[in-house]
Length: 83
Image (tube, rainbow, N blue to C red; front, side):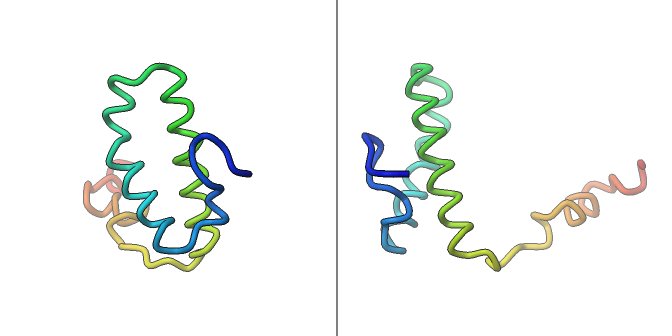
């Protein structure tokens, strides 16, 4: 993505700025969902996706918490027994 009204391309952000942008967009997500216009929600979603995809691109081997995986969630809820 190139420079746009939502801010500079995620690919062009240095690491610290990328993290700050991610924190800010996640902090404002709920409010945008509940009270933003349709256009605001679409723009917010596109920017959030751009930032998240860039983070994952840069950190393909990021640390994952077992409880945040499918098998970890099933173990937590006992869902494997229900299958």
